[in-house]
Image (cartoon, rainbow over all chains, first blue to last red; front, side, top):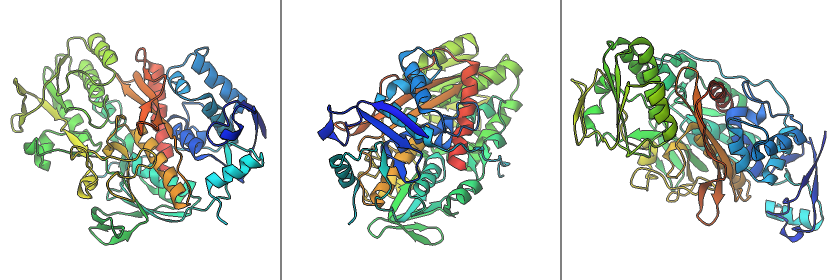
Length: 126
Length: 420
């Protein structure tokens, strides 16, 4: 799977020397040898409360794992600018930077779809 | 030669080997032993992600005396008759086996921070890093008459989900029509800011449908409703008209357990069912180890790592943290992940993320089906060195069944993430 995303602020954190010179185009492969930056890994995991581990929702919310990255960016952008109405997602979309939305898109696109489960219930111990 | 992340980025930059946001996994493997004290939302999440993000390089041992996880989120629905406590009760089996987490069913009695040893009732454990996720403790020195298990049978707090939740529900079921339910709310900060107001809705929902002549009196130590104020005010006026008597600035100073009478500075109120939610502070273990340095109640931490500001190599996460952040389950898991990610970095000789960002979504049920949210993204402010609200946060326009569905989905997904 190959994902092409235009990311204009990518240089900001770590590659200051290149800032302003490049529109970096990210080729993100679903490659075992690559892991997300700690920043995106942690941020993406924060989505798990509603969307499940690595975006594998158990139901009732969108599955983000394996979601087409462009689709993700379009939806988040639409939540951000209000062109797609939502109950809560506009709050999250507005709080993220464009760069974070792009990076999350790449991250979720790379996650394998698995069937997530809720843990079985127990009888409350006396 | 070990290449740290900064070196790697320099090399990547100089050779235009740009593969961001993906970093090479070639960096040093995190190794060591992390002991996590507490298996609630924060502790269980930290344990799981410490294992996963270190690719199993870190040994993780959880110390937790309880064998069951009982969710506080959704537990108010038990009072409304809209959930059974067993719907909120889980085991730790899948969490342990799926992630190779070791488990010690014991209670921590002290730590020796200098030699990095946790002492428990039976035995001790050495650690490289200690994560404390103790939840909250009640300040019974302010209400000593409520300290004993016997008095809590009569006047439950039900602010840690479990037997007391079931007890309070049974008391409501036994209450006569025309009875009075009295609930007191402590001064903020306390666990789950909108929780008491949600509880009022749930109790009112039950009484409206089964005992419509009954009343709910709310004694709030705060000057006003401290979360989702406009929404709760409207719901109480419209859905539960005439049932709820809200009294701000009403701190409980005394309780007569036998007669279920509470005293504030201004009045005495007698209840048929009495629910006093006591003032709170960081969980016992945080107190014992001396990490609760803010007002002797809450723990000051570095928000990049959640390491205690006063005890090295000891990290504190969840409700015990002193922060302008809501003490919610989602927040506890968000803090746990930042902490876990930072520990994995530190134990692999790398720098933790310098600008963590996370989300918090908190739903409150106002009836059996309808809920409303407060949601925010929080971002590290490098100048203030705290987490601050990002743009776009806020609350629902109105409660809805759609949000009720999302709230149920939130619970199922967070349980899946934390416990499997």
